[in-house]
Length: 259
Length: 241
Picture 1 (cartoon, each protein chain N blue to C red):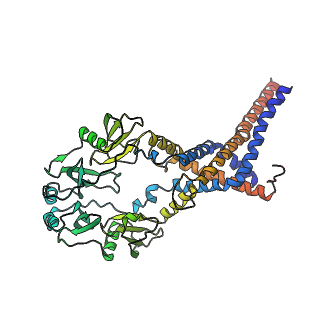
Picture 2: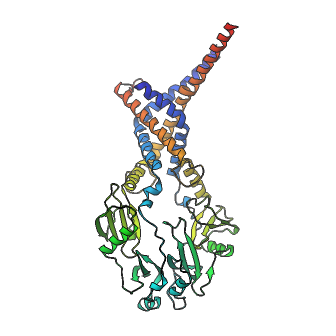
Picture 3: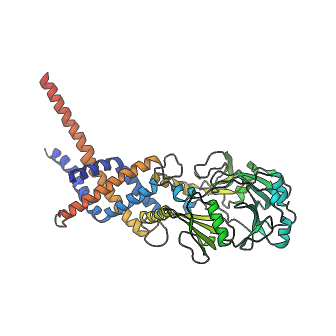
């Protein structure tokens, strides 16, 4: 008699404790679970390559025409004896030499020898339009030479910001000294960045998942989840098993009666 | 309405409950991980740019190279093991990790150089400053497990140090893709659990996590409504908690 009583009491106790833990913990940190699930859902629903703006730009496969290198590399080296890391490529449809002298980058027109860097506003617009896959027009172009927005690394400075007219507000950033599209952003990226910060509970500046706030909330979250799982076990799995058993017994009984 | 809220909460918890536990657990693991260690670069030698190639008169003029290789999209002067090369891009991807096709030309002789096993081992060794020795070198035509998003063929160079460091050298260009070791692999495993990325595509945009995230939304939102309901009905009393 006492034995059966004990057996009955034990799981009930676990259930009661879990129920209380779950209820009270979730009162305080439940909101963070909502934030985690909403921000997490945004991040998994939207393709990360789309978020990164990969679909905003073309990767042109136009080949270099060696005949267009009428300004010889020999002349270039005579003019810039300290030129380092030389490359030859196309800037929109013009063959160019790119190199650096010390930390300074240069673009030289390989047909004429004309120095193209730092590129002009008009040139930045041409480059951006050439790269951009959408059909919107440019709404604004501005040079950022000192403090970039947080979405652009300072190593790209100076950089041209070219905004396009589209509901997702795409922006291409073109480095003034190499003419390349170095950063691409649109509203979905900014939203993603915001979601990510909320997901890792980063309410400061650095995007660091090693923060103490996250640690403590996550430890409580672990307890809340475990207690929730206990409730699921009792309320769903065990309840279902009991029901099935009762049903079986009832079936048996009815079968027995028929016999 | 509350009957439905409770039902949704119950059944959603049955579907995603265990995954919730994995999410929170792996989240705590991220929080405690030493991200410097987990980068896999414990034995990575600092890249030395001191020997970056100056445009000396010894080099073949780029015009001559471009005449010989008319399919070039971009030509870059580069160096591998202090030797000058021209790296020609013949198919260009958006990123370095995207599909790119290269031709590597010796900048002094004009000879096309392919990164063979021997050269790849030497390049890997130059980027490595740990105590280990190379035990095996494999050519991988498909993305490696350590760098699943890197599309191009690579040489996998394994070292026998205590962290089981592996250095990946891009076959087309000879550049270092990255270092991986047991610390990075553990972090990658935790990421895999958190992202439900069971086929290790290095992505969190897979079907299973999208479905689970959808159900989880129902779980947390029903929980939120339930809590608000309990609050407004005085179910939270400290005296009879």
